[in-house]
Length: 583
Image (cartoon, rainbow, N blue to C red; front, top):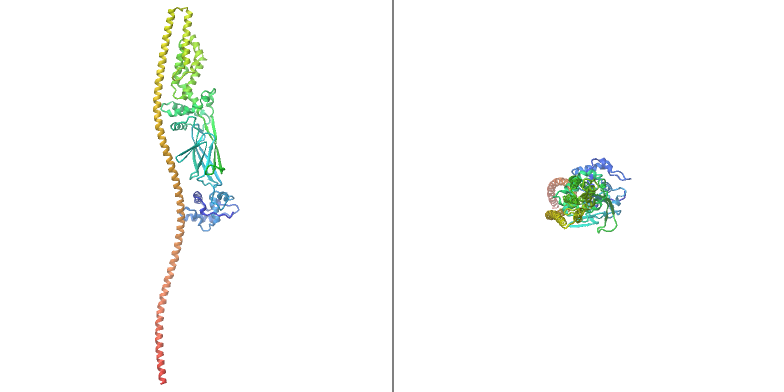
């Protein structure tokens, strides 16, 4: 292997934790011998693996600091490097390039990055936001924090919250957090934006539909239930949200000449999502890239078809037309249009109203194309010439101006023809005819005023309900705003908690290093205590020997003093003897 060795200070917090987890998970020396292997190099060996396990056991069953591994006897720089490279999952033949960015003298850089994209849910329904998570790791699997990643989409808009700042667009640049990840949303709003309450109501309703269903027929019961929820008066926000989405496909799906196909297949929109790791300012060349295709299923066509089925089954419009067609003369048109207006006025919401208009046109075609022999000639002529066109102008609050004019004109023509046929064109009879026409016109005006009054009452009731719902929406929007602020603050708190946890991890690392140093210090103190005890024993022996020496010295001094005294006496005696001889 290259003569490049790693030391404990070369690793960041995440790498240290990964190495310690690798060693703490080991269950046998043979496992370590198998997992730590360099091509062309001697294996780490069972004995050295056992030494690692013994050192771990001596530390309480877990390594808590990477310096503890480096301090094990016979774990030199080369063995320590091999252990760490294996624990980080680096290619033994390229580990220097992967770890240092091909420069052994440099600190680890951002080369060798990998970017991944996670998107939920998939597949999704049109109108559902997608939760996008971008993750950045190095080739060793270590999460990288603070990496700038530019994310772009081909459909919709990306939303990224950075503190209190909302960044939105087809392309945004995000920064990875302590876990190496950044989170944002991909939304596909309609041309008329929904309120937060309407969006929440729609998202909740769509969660009850299984997006993995292969075709709409599998979800017929769920779509009928959604149609029933749409019709409930209290579901005002859901109704508005669906109406806004349906309006964008009104021409394609409601006015379609082949609407039945929406029961058999899903229209699918797809987009390419791309993420590039770039410089901190969001520019430069891409260091790593991830791409992913995301898809939304369009539920609108299937919902409209199953909703139309429910309308037909619940109101029996064809039977109502058949009953109203039993009248006499041109007046049958008014009865038929009254049934049509009643039918469409009962439908809550714009989407249901558009469906109701389509159902009226279909029922009118069926009536005109059916058996009309039971009608008198005048009624049959009116139905054949006027009803289908007139039915197209029916709305919840009006029959349509064409209908009223055509009806009055037909009624007047019928009366004039009858008078001419009888040859009664005298003034008196004409006055009677005119009086009859005035009476019929007054009756029509009275009926029209009644309908207008009813429509006005319905309109006022709807306005009152709309006003109350608007106030409710305002309060809910205020709540949503406050909840959004609370969520933002929670996010900031979580970020601070993450930073605190990172600092705690660093503190624990430093504490582990301190513990290792303290253990080394205690070992040295124990060695010193042992040596000091030996020194004390030797000192005691020395003091005893010194005391014996002092005693012997004292005795020797006494004997020397005695010898000196005896010598002095001898000298005096010698002197005395010599003096006597001289004399």
